[in-house]
Every structure is written in structure tokens, then in C-alpha cells.
Image 1 (cartoon, rainbow, N blue to C red):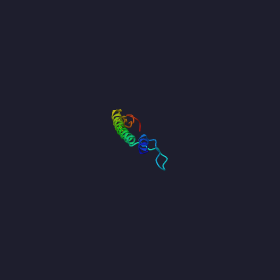
Image 2 (cartoon, rainbow, N blue to C red):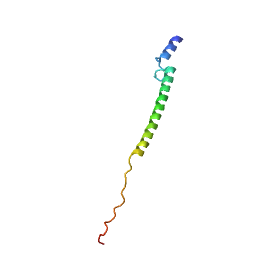
Image 3 (cartoon, rainbow, N blue to C red):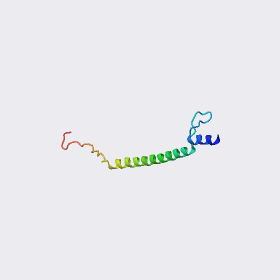
Image 4 (tube, helix red, strand yellow):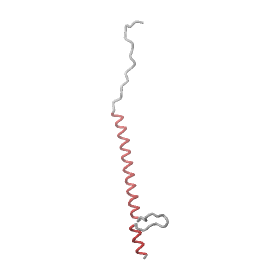
Length: 78
């Protein structure tokens, strides 16, 4: 009976007591945690790349030149 329970627990087919949730094997939990860490690392890398590209784009855009205020024409009447 013990071996049967162990096999069921490893397969994740047992239900936890009182929680109505499936028991997940520890190896699966560790694998998923490692996957989450890897995805978070990649997200951080992509976020940093995105910020660098935004800054590069701002530097590469031509600056809008503001013309000085127009002066009144010469020789005009007062």
C-alpha cells in the first residue's frame, strides 16, 4: 500500500487532504520553478534591451529646431 501511495504521489494523481488540490511531484515543482526563473531572467534581459533601444532612438531622432522669433521688417514705419 505504501509503494502504491508513493507512486501516486510521484505521478501527482493523489489529492491533498482537505484542499481538493492535486498533489504535484516535487520534481515537477522544481522544474517549473526553474522555468519561471529562466523566463524572469529573459524578461529582464528583454526589458533592459528595450530601454536601451528607446534611449538610442531618442538620441538618433533629429532634434526639432526652433526658429528664433521673427523680427519686424527693416525700414518699416513706426
